[in-house]
Amino acid sequence: MKQYLEIGKVNNTHGLKGEIKLSMWCDGIDYIKQFKYLYLDDKGENKLTLLSARPQKNIAILKFAEITDIDSAQQLKNKIIYGNRDDAEIEDGRHYLADIIGCYVVDIDTEEEYGKVVDVLNYGSCDIYDVESWGKHTLIPAIDDVVKEINTEYSVIRIQPMKGLFDED
Image 1 (cartoon, helix red, strand yellow):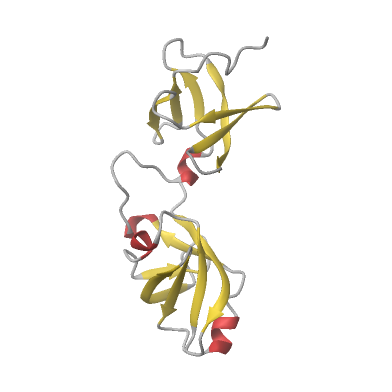
Image 2 (tube, rainbow, N blue to C red):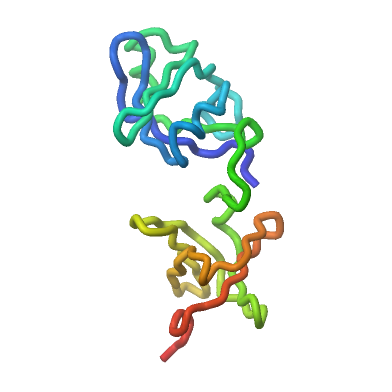
């Protein structure tokens, strides 16, 4: 499992005192507010101290102790911001997308393997798992009627396939 997870991408500066605008790739501002530190790399080597985080429409405005003016904020444009998974909590039954990708999808009744999750998409109503097997992609809605169990520790997602989902006809 990845220790440092993508939180979002800096898309611009905000004001003159070093604040940045972040396109959030996480559940929202409350998740970000759990962090004391965020990082500019996926190894946790380039640490920034988070002083404040507030929402503005569909983005977050962040202020870091180390970024004090617009010039230094400008250096962060287009950078990915990471968080240490140990520094934040998610609700029971929720999973990080980074942990879902790479899981094998199997039938809950027959143990037949359908493939591996290669991406997680979302067009509004629910997440959709892109499952690949031998170059063929199948999109599986991540809804309770289909996804019955997710075990990221063993990289397995057990599903009850909908009629026609994997039928070849």
